[in-house]
Image (cartoon, rainbow, N blue to C red; front, side, top):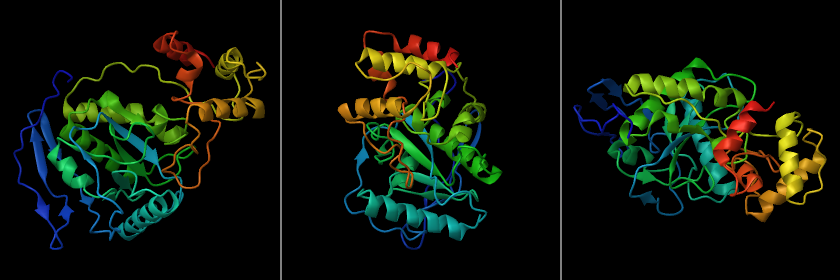
Length: 321
């Protein structure tokens, strides 16, 4: 636990319940370093979610990471109404259950472009309020028992988030970090775990700002950032691609060493992923996105190998362009 970041003492009232038995978010919290208020979160009953197809899994420990996603679809709409937020929550749940075959919505929470926060997977709000356990979702491959995920409506590869969404994201992440004692440096993007562009270059680039905002609100120091594995995509060029090609060639792949992420390099990366059971279509929680052959956080360690220092290679790649 970071210095100055301690478990809170509840000074506010208890949980409020709707007349239908669902939970609503109207509870204030406080810490010695300032006032942390639970943002307004609309529960699954309020947006008329389908029941899950199986029992929700609740693990007996808090999550380690807060993970930020983007939905990709329905795109960057101008509809900021609460009704639209409920509509996309239903659409996401239908997509995850009917197309992906999951038991419920994959992420624990969703934020619309209008800044409306909805509960995703059932019981996520209830368990978040406890601050001791964790609803296991389906949004980060191989890490679902350790992450709590937030889907942000829109596509943020080139465009920035609207202020309404950004403010709601800051409020929700602060509350999550407070409830679960998650240090701000463990606020991550999906691409920090899997080979996906999620949550988009622009939103991912603002995570440093988000960590700083959460740290200030919680009164906890924010350690210096450390390099992460870069994401390489078809069409990329430069020294990082050349490094990847050299590592692929060491492992027998027949690729050029020209610094261009072309079809041969993409195929070689996809082969490595498939050989290790990582041949998923990128962010499975994002609608209609196929990112096979992207080279990210789960593929680099396979290329670098256990005999080499991962931290040293991260620093080396951070300096490469």
